[in-house]
Image 1: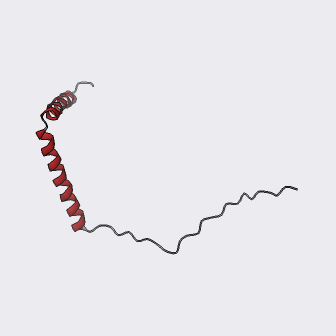
Image 2: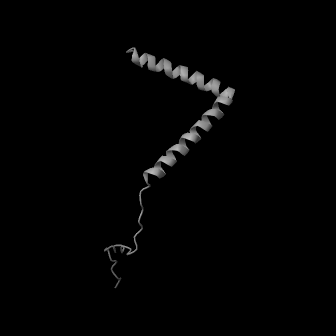
Image 3: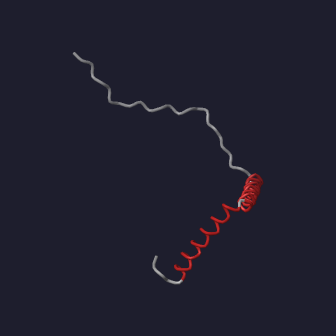
Length: 77
């Protein structure tokens, strides 16, 4: 006779060791925010120095401004 397969699934045991994750303090959050702002300003300066990229950025900004003006004016998109 063939042995029957068990259809019951075993449940994984919970670990008795737990990992505690603390949320960052307000000072740490502020530090990260400042570092992010500094990085953003550094990147903006790099972009502004790149004349070819800035020309494309200005072109796209003009296109977006036109789209927004059409929306503000009530024109259908």
